[in-house]
Image (tube, rainbow, N blue to C red; front, side, top):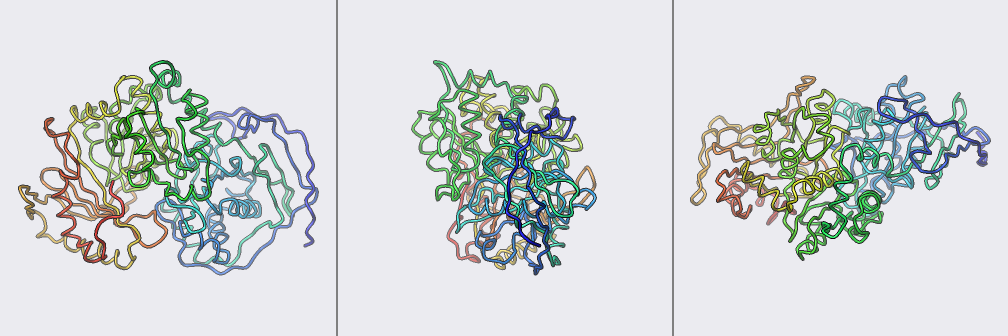
Length: 606
């Protein structure tokens, strides 16, 4: 085929249709972008090319898509193309032809190159329409929101979440399905099987799009009856409109403005959330512009680790310790995780955060309208949420780690609010965890109760008791070492004689009541998910959990979780590390993790 230079012709757009839940799936670009939509059409058909390739055997998606070192995507021939073709092929041909998909990125290095490649392949594989955030930027919650809003068949998110960016960092490709949530295991397994045998991919190498200009661009392709359409939409608008229906913006604005305003400090960590924080918290809700820091998305996140925890969000923690700010929050690279801090650096454990929100759902108008169908938490998350559910007489579901499990419950009308200990919180308005939603939920509670973050948490402990909790992360462990460590540990704890075994540490005595490799039977479809973490439950409701994480790109991460419940109100204000010390000692002794890995301690303590 002869390549014809692209010449763009402008034409007037067709009138936009109504844009609402349950309405048309047509996307009115002018509503989303705030600008008049402009359609563009190539002057000559663009060739569709088939390229031969060789499969890779390491493209099994993890908990949140395929994550590797960026150098893998850059250096391995057709590595991105192979996986993209596998994703597109996993969609039934009849569903794929002419369908709509959403795409966005967290702005990390290699995103623009990847977007161009995926757009070209989507066109060649029969996708009819791609909706992309301006400059390629969309948070993971915003992608979920748009997928649901326009009834898209799914979406592709270019992110490695809380992992570092830049040429020496990580990159990832995540596929979300039509409900707006992460692909379930049946889909990711299908993608993986295709990736092991893929021999060719289809692409349109001459197709070029403008990510900067809001509006509609159309391209005539060879052997295609309908033009391929790309719509560049405002990064924030659809998501903002959704939040307006969930929260009382006037109450939050009243909290953040005026003579008695709550001074807040919000750290976007140079990830995708910068535009959302400025537009929503500052422009819409009135927080001073200097309340928001690190709000310019950078390809390498400013050389920092975009992980909102006490180890990596140290600048926010130090600012909060000064006492000037009453509320602080940080977000990860793609905006689905959050950390909440109170005045003087008071840390809200993520497990407590979801429990506090659950106990105060009456402060959020969305739940006043929809009611509460159920709560859910991942197995490693503390049981603080269970205690709220018991008092409120609301069912609580315990799932494996991974938001896709919550999504299935939500689709079945069984879950309204859920959370994970890994700084993820959300509700059934979308099918992803949502960092900014959690921040607005907390601000709603503060506005209603007129208490500080610390007062709200301690009041919660007084009412429900405190679940002392911590997590040790051992990152980048040799994968073989991690595998055999977990295998040997499982053999120990699943011995029949292990039940009722006593562990005496100082003045503390712990008796094993239950030990197992956690498996989950989905109450919706009956699908069984096995090998989701080793857990020990003691007779006093204390827990120890050992789990291999699925979100890393290099080596393996072993996470150890310790939890101890305290009902005595005179003992709920102690240091968590002191309280959990005996349990942690048991965990280290059982796992022998320091001896077997050569480590002296964890990489991160939460």
